[in-house]
Image (cartoon, rainbow, N blue to C red; front, side, top):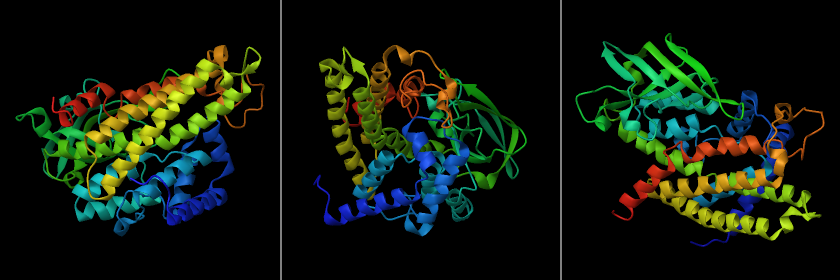
Length: 398
């Protein structure tokens, strides 16, 4: 693979930079770069800007409102948007359920849901994990029983990211208990405003409300909200997870975070000299940079394979493992960069309009929160231990 950009690709990079210079709101970029809290309205505002530009659904076919970008163009967009401080795209609608609907849904579902994802009318969340079914997802217990023109759904989902904002949830439910676990699962689209759906917050260790529990008590779901065939949901779930795992690698985000870390390390002193000049610390940064370069090349290969009509398989598991380890290493090093000041947590410092005195570096206020939050990366989307088993089986044949 040629790692040098062509003339056309350099022109596209210039176009992306002009767009970000002109259209990325300064307050949103400041929040992202400085680790401050993002609101639902911030995400929706940025989505509208991308949709107007036609750059929101980068993985969709053009016929459904997607944009025809090459693998390298997608890579350029990821790197440049992260470097500029553009917020991450909330993936559950545009990058997760939409590809499933496009590939396995019927025409009515495509016409009903895809335009609403593009416009931002629907905010989706994911209903996969349960209290007893996380990495072992096939053991899920949420039941959907056919009753005429509806399914009656009962059960519980957990770790539902941003479910407090969502009006739609895509769910794995058990529709058949007479077959082996993977064969009795179906893929349902459920309106969160349906009677019987209850969302309860889970406050995580860094004090944030990002994840939730979702309960279903005799929830009536129209049969037409079934995607594909009944009892074939495991196939659709695996297809979706390959896209989630690739996205979890966060190559562009890692590069931006590493650049931010270097800035902080150049301002903080150790023994009277900038921390970044410390031999041990600089060696750790160099190792991350080398790992990140290797992950970047792997990411390009996977994107190119998808662009050629393939589906990322074990390769996405490899990238998920390595990419999340890199992101965790960066947050660990960032926490170390501000030393003992990483231990106290001043929640008010996470607001962009905070005008008080900062305990330490004003751009390091979120380092501890990010460190704790990023521990989850090696767990969700399929734990890294399970991903290593997949690689061992599919690539090494062991």
